Image 1 (cartoon, rainbow, N blue to C red):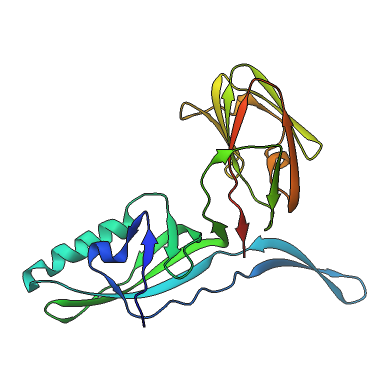
Image 2: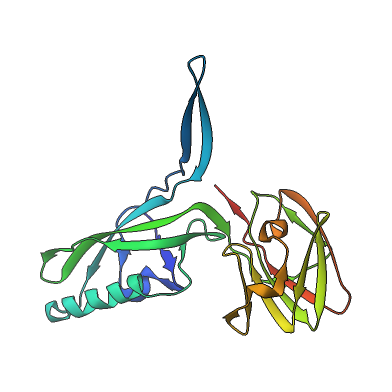
Length: 230
């Protein structure tokens, strides 16, 4: 296998002297269903959403000295278990990332005094996200993927009316307001301020295809689109 790395929380496995043994499998998400029996012997299947996916990766490392082995493994655990952006990326598909929900490290095998081997299981959202930074919103956004839940940052002062795809929301900005449609929360200066929004977060989702925007003069809107696919 050629050089192959992961990036997690903005660090690579090589930053902590880890090597990947084999390229991991990336399973497809499974749709969950609720089943309802109806007269006539038929069954209705109601979609309940996709389940999380688990990605398991085998690592190994060699310490410079046997006395460094425990210290090296502590450093590895710090990287994997610390809080960060929770983005997991693979060097052969660098333009997308997985959102990690939990990380489980199994008990390492110390095969020789300096050599360690273990498996890490990342439990991730079912979607794969396009790695795209915030940018200034124009009058339309084209979404080539699934319905997405963006983050909006609105700069200005006073009340703004935003029209997206013929749906309307209003907000009290007060210099800057962040609307996170994925979490269903508004923030002002890092503090939750949901009363600032009048309308439904769902109306701010990016639909597949063209999404048309207009808003009150005197405001600037920046968007992190969070485009996603399966």
